[in-house]
Image (cartoon, rainbow, N blue to C red; front, side, top):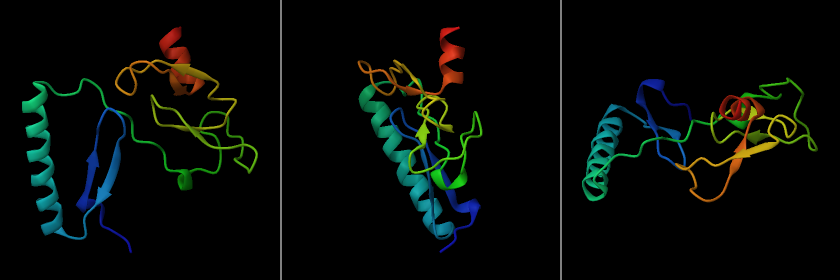
Length: 121
């Protein structure tokens, strides 16, 4: 089943960001209101909004090759997602890890070489 883009909601959170699609305008409005109420309740409890959100990841089915070096993905050359920008890249283009506190305060996570260079350089 296909959904119309006008009924899509982008959900952003520190740990994961994603898109959900409603079937129609009524569902879209109902979901939007419930999400706003939930966010407001969480903000009231926490006293603040999160400072950062995880990026939307490029979907696996959107790319057959690394977004940085254009090498084709295979059974042995696997897809990896950069936790900082969400790009889809190969293992050679995602060799590094960074501490992204909005995802995990103690454990460095996989990032692409470009994000690593931008942050470290």
